[in-house]
Image (cartoon, rainbow over all chains, first blue to last red; front, side):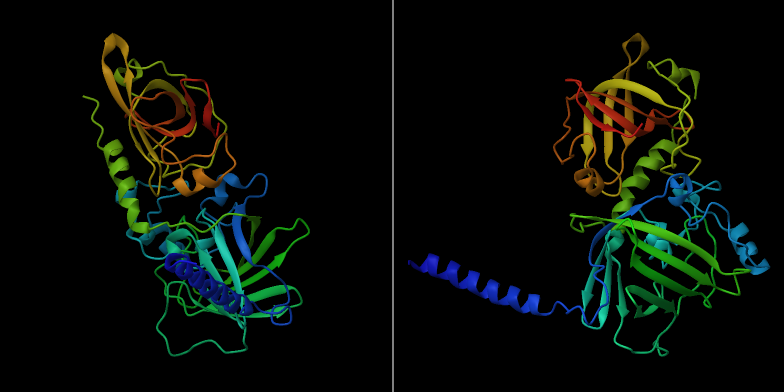
Length: 251
Length: 127
């Protein structure tokens, strides 16, 4: 074995040891009641595709006066009230995080990784990561309000129940500007349904913005994809295209 | 759509089934479709939307520069569409026919639904 071959073999051994150590980190079934891991992509139920790209239900949720005033004053880029990118006040177009649950609407895959005491959700959209602690800890109370919220999970049978709070009020619940306050609490129930899909049943409680809780579901099919790069700042390329379109002069 | 641009290409404006608008309601006309044939001048396989630019010969032999957009490159590369897309699937000089939702303001730009190459191969078909 010459020097190059030896080096290659040593590197392969080191990689094998590292891979073995990584494998050892995969939890046993006892730590998580179901295996929800994998790369998942959104599936729309028949008849929902038209609105599922921008909101969670066919009809608007019932809003409080506070919520309705905020909704009316906003300029979403999507949906029936959609305006061009240059005119929207949707902060996602400035590359701020979309927040939770809105992240589920963005049509890019999401990977679930289950670790001991923790579930990671890695969203392709702008590489956002949610960490859902399942080790029995309480919600943090020392941190400022956040874009994606503070998530604690627990298992009820084979359903992962996630409760998320500590949101700022800068995001919208969906892409057509249904607002929320810092009082918003999101409850998610993730499980494999009878079709083998990952079903996420959600309930948004926000007495400041919503007259009653907003409940909806999203569905995902498992894929053999890998999560790729998707950087929000690259959206500038599209703005250029859209500006070229909007500045079209027919004269 | 302006009459000027309307005369520059052979447009098939059809009643289209409502589809999820790719962008704000103010940009493209989701209820209309247009088809143009031309030569690719630029192909950008980039996030967030793949862009295709082409020269289309209009009435009187005048060249019109068309632009069209597709979904993300990640999606085109992984979805089981007509063919699997990659960064060299189109190049300047290729002859293609594209169909899509036209710009509301008459600009020669579209939200692309379908592309067929010079050999008749369907590269994407979201019609």
